[in-house]
Length: 236
Image (cartoon, rainbow, N blue to C red; front, side, top):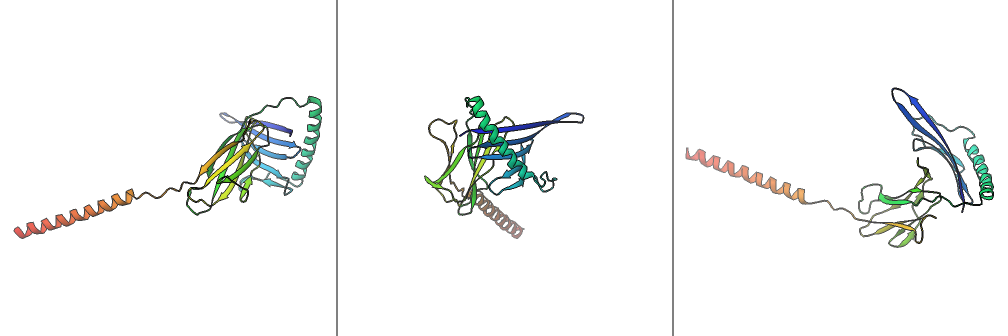
């Protein structure tokens, strides 16, 4: 599978008392099976085209001015067609030279604190790989699971490599073992797999016990002091 990407970077220097450098990015990527168009600023995504739903997705926060306009998605479709034509031409001209390959790093963690039998989300963060695509799969207790799984767009990093997130909705039960497996052309042999075991932390009874003992001793001390005070008054 060949992947071709066009990366346009506009560097903006804002002049105040100091110089601030910003990076404005447009990424167009295509292969025989995948296509992607996104825009970003300083490492954050501003917009991407969803070619499955056939619509543009503005990912700016609600308070920001929108950057999309009528025909924005259609323009991205045209850019993908140009990308495919360039890809075919480059394959013929350059005869598929050896690619630069960067293997992915993978981490897995839960979105929220783990509470037994309370629905949560596992996140598999795959980062630092080049080129796309990667294949991400999940297992639960060594059984492949697909229900509740989702995969993000590829996110371009400043160094030219990519990030991607895969999520899996799950209901934790003590002892369950989940794994996220990542396959990329840079990984020789077996794909990379990270595992995550459900470990529900039980609330510690230590503080409650110490507080109870302290309160009891305090009450006993008050009672003893009152007793001796009364005895002393009776002696007088």
